[in-house]
Picture (cartoon, rainbow, N blue to C red):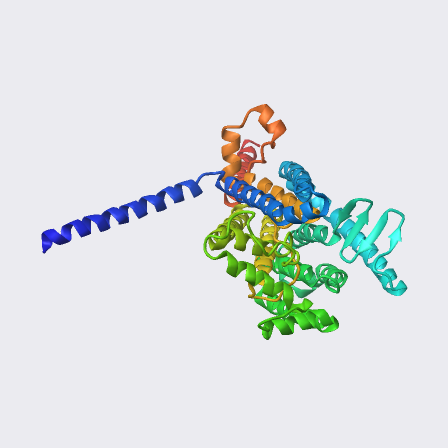
Length: 459
């Protein structure tokens, strides 16, 4: 019996040693100075490639039917991806002081665009028209059209709010524990944004609320503040749902879904679940999905995850979820490792935004939460969202290179000059720890005192 048990014990030890070796190798990789940077680049890059592929798959049949060109939507999305990569390149080269200087202008321009868009929408409602034309400018619910160019102001509000809130909170420092320090000017500006965005776009309002919660959590605000924000947020969401019948009807169909529905309030969700059921574990094959042929509304943006589920199956969905999980881990890792309070707050808020939007979109598609109409970051068709998302990744990349260990490693073995000119300059070296600075200053004072005593003796 002992001899028979020996092979089993040897195999168990081999499996254990193999597992321990894998864990040690993973820890070694994560312990490298630039691990955060490479994790961020690889996860975001793979999500972008998946997004371009799925946009082509979701829009190809429609484009062929419209004008015979299956690559029309892909070419447009690829152009926005190129602009987004340029925004990434610029943002990863900028220091923190530049982001702080740009915080107010970005938020101010975004608010001005929102006010202009809402004014045009109000004018259209008074006239009884769907849209208002002012020369080349046209309003369309959540978008501004300037000729052939389309812009969604609420996307720029997200990044403007993150930079501005992080700048305001990081300047307050220890005074942040007092309610009056939060009340002015943070809460009035956030309330204004909720009003400007929420009455037309409840999903974006939820993302703004998640951003505020994320930045306050990273700042270490007391739990009473979070409880108050939660209550106020629920109250605001309830008012917005009650004020619009279609939102209320969508909520009712979520809690009491019909088995068969051809109404607008539940049709999209049911078709999305049909696509998921049709995909199974391994999917029907890339480009072979059937529900996108006019059955699934918004297959190229809000419900593109249903196309992924139908064509790539559960395995494809797990890959997408895993990439977002890596992105979440990396963003929080950067926020935890960075020394500068402003960078830490921005990294935490950016991560909260991207992950919360992905979870809300996917949760709506699979039926876990009501549908909100939010795009899936990196993957859904849409120019403004993709460009702003890539700019956010550029900021996180800049902060990842500024981690203390990463900055020391880059300065110890700096890349070639042409690499720094074409890709990114060297980040600033981390400042000395406070204990070292205090001990150095104490040593300096002691030396001056000894010198003073010696001078007195000489006198």
